[in-house]
Image (cartoon, rainbow over all chains, first blue to last red; front, side):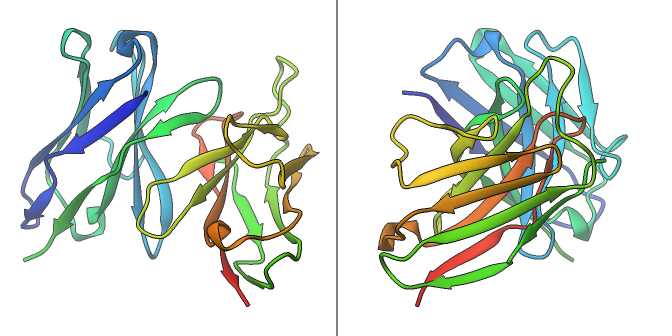
Length: 117
Length: 112
């Protein structure tokens, strides 16, 4: 069974940093591109970042480019998102999701990031 | 970016009655490879999204056949033939044809 388990969320002040992790199991992690997607009640679902299967290529939403960094360790079946220079508007539930053929086949349960002074 | 617009944004349906959700894209979602990467997700209260439909009309394993997807180009529809209590939640369309992937605002389905 495919499982994605996010961790690392928490409460942080504006300008602070967090590192999110996503532990994958039940599939060959290194065969798939992975995404981070966030969700808020006000804005709904928003794509944040993509990393290709080998980590060779990364993409970011304009709203996070230059502040967030996605990475992966295929030997540990793990995906990461480093969040720096956090803003109030980054407050959201962050999901990792497995990419296959223009879709998200699986999502984690999400980890909540709250940016507040 | 392809803007995805869903309607209605909320829907109250009597048990056993049909429901229909529309999703329109600002750009055609037909890909040069011949596929149309339009997906539907269900998000039950307190849960993460679960994919129901991919490439317009293909049901995922375990998805009841009362769910069906249709459409082409820029206009797509998710239909539930007979709504059951377990269908309560929010339904999202998502396009994976054009970069970046984008989502509809979500349609909240409730039981009347």
